Length: 427
Image (cartoon, rainbow, N blue to C red; front, side, top):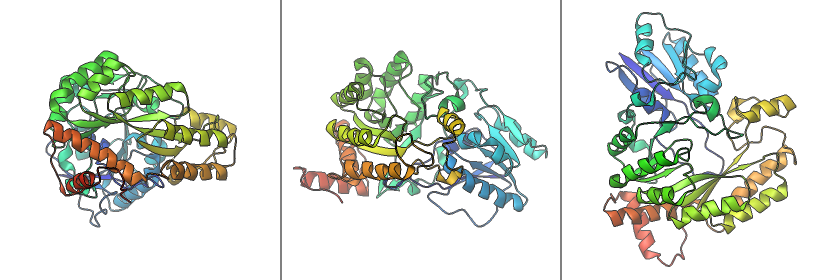
């Protein structure tokens, strides 16, 4: 039997360098499917959806709000052809009722230990409209290796550089950040996977560069140390979301190959300044994830924030506009105050102003978003900052003997050698 798993296309951030990482949710889900099913994976971001409907059963995996309308179109397309469709993923969990109008079945929650029953129901023509395992989490001990064999590897590269592979070491998040829906989706309890299972999965990935996609690694100090210590022999180079602000933890992270971190930056406080400095002191680069449009932000605040990012020598920055995604505190508050301007989910791309800001007009915040990108990357374009980040990781790989040159890596390596004085820019 053939199961076609589809990941709908979605729009990248305006002004962001265009590249695509191999998606994580679909390969984790695929690992839970019955072994006797053939799985065909289509990532619509890197390849067209086949014109044929050659599948016995179709799954649509949606991560982002901005994927939802396209996912519903795809589901409708197959259902018109008499093929059953099941939808899942965290986007589906945020938009469950609407998704139910377009799918034969909606799966809510984490899939481990549950898909055999779903596929048995399909075989016996008793597929349920909803499989609700929301907040009913399986034990992390049964989470297996993601099924990366379904990926078409040659489609995931940027100018010849193979993109990082995604892996997760935990689920859930004990924090409850204002604009985030993770506490709704995965619960407020930190749920680490057994370290030995994480290490085994990482060791089996044929890629030296990884993205550890956990919401935050800074949730259990001893677990972090145990994880990083066990990662050292792998000699992987990896990026992640925040690490504990602790010198021992950071030292182990650096030894384990920490390449750079995504660090949320909301203000110009000494706490942020010191946090970025401590990452840099341990040889770990920082990409700031910078949210614009908080109720505390005025135009002058945003200008000061951009100046601050340049002052602290942030390696990269990704700017987004505050977006009231469903099931966040932001959505609840803005809905109550009548500040949400549209519920066209295609506009929820985090680069469009779809609410009324507190201290400026929507149009002016949109202009400030453009100002942030233009000002931060005025002297060094984003492509050049990315080049410097890749050059740094290749130098580390050469030092520990893990460098595997590819066509574009050779170009970057040669460019770095010929322009060692730093005078040239790749534009």
